[in-house]
Image (cartoon, rainbow, N blue to C red; front, side):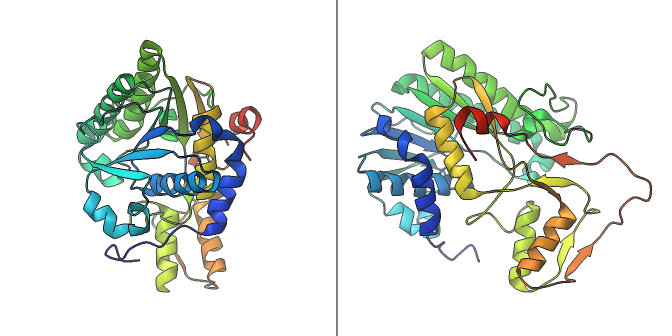
Amino acid sequence: MPRSESKPPLPQDDLERVLALTRGLWEEARGARFLITGGTGFFGMWLLESFVHVNRALGLGMRAVVVTRDPEAFAKKAPHVTRCGELEFLKGDIRRFPYPEGEFRYVIHAATEASAKLNAENPREMYDSIVSGTAHVLGFAAQCGARKLLLTSSGAVYGKQPSEMTHVPETYPGAPDPLQPASAYGIGKLASEHLCVLEGAAHGFEVKIARCFAFVGPHLPLDTHFAVGNFLSAALRGGKLEIHGDGTPYRSYLYASDLAVALWTILFKGASARAYNVGSRYDLTISELARVVTGTFGMPGSIQTLKAPPRVPTAVSRYVPEVWRAEHELGLR
């Protein structure tokens, strides 16, 4: 879909699913105010639309202030969201937006520059936007009397997943290489987690951490560095799917309604200062993913792999979470 066109609302079935799987969590938020950063991105769109749907279905009387750099552009992108009376949009950069007045019971910090291009070309800016943005949000949480704060972190905090480890658990002590500029995103997220825990302990609010992996569903960007988005974009145009590597890396993809369920569950029910992996444990290679897409679109043979697999077996690239903690502690499926 061209960027100039407005996006349609999320499927009603998906919103009903989020409501059904979180219905018992919301009563504590009746009449509460939320501050949400990153509300205009992929994660944020799912959070905002499910927030409005649940709020109206359960008559909770909740309200949210959404921080965004460009409210006018977002109004063109998602008029069905900006027209919702329970949402107010506050213009500002995440590192210096003006603090809204009054009490806010919940803060959701989902704003991140998830741009591979920025991370490669200006890693210092990437790091600063993540860490300084988190520090500014934490200052607000301390001031507004927040009870709970949710940080959407990333599986990138683990650094490179060992090839012999099929699923990375929250207990894995790995970390990004601090001597590599390309580690700016992962180290920024790791520093943000630590800042949140420090400020939560100092000011008495609970800190919930969601380490997010890879996802698919409505509102996913189709023109960035996400392989599944690129494949879907090519299939929608009827063209060939290009695999830029050799197709051997393993990834997994969680559908976005399950992402929304997980984030709301972690906010309300997750243990404070405890990280939860959010993603799917069902892995597949990039080549298998391409075949799933072409099979779904009825386009067999429409895959072009630009690099041949190595003749001699090498270490396999993986980015796949273990989600035992979310399943057994929070009941997520």
